[in-house]
Length: 205
Image 1 (cartoon, helix red, strand yellow):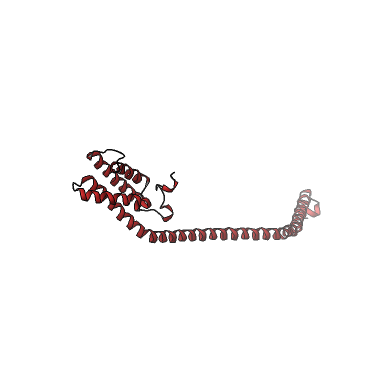
Image 2 (cartoon, helix red, strand yellow):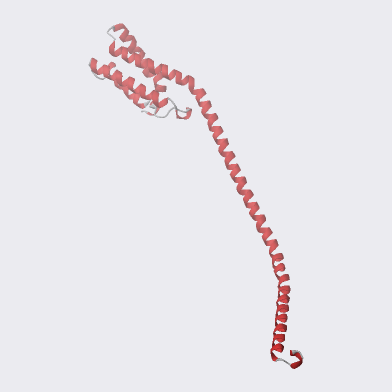
């Protein structure tokens, strides 16, 4: 005789438990089947939003790239324009710079001749040239320091001051020192800066 035929309670309990597990498994499978469409529906609902966000992100990224490219191109154009302007200034300034050097060296020679020459005729000629430089070319070229040195030297010549030979020679050296500094200051000047640190006579009373 079998356990079923004898109505064994243990066998019946095991059978019931097995049925319960089968039912729970089927219930879980049904729940998963029910949830699966819901998950896909959620994803489908979110897809347009995600697509829109991606499109916006792509647009913003494109704008940023465009702006950066424009900034680089503008910086390149500005650099090139500045280079061209500097080249034009150098081309224009070259003859002016050469004339400036010539005039400066001549002014230094003239004040030295006045301060050192023992020949009265040569000294008078040098004094005449000094006043020509003073009233002419050096007005265009001289710095404030050089203008002051020339004025101080001129006072020894026009009777404003009674200058001894040592004083005259020292002031001649001051003129040459001011010329030296003016050459250094002007070596890299742009055309727009040419009047920088110049003495402006037209502004005087």
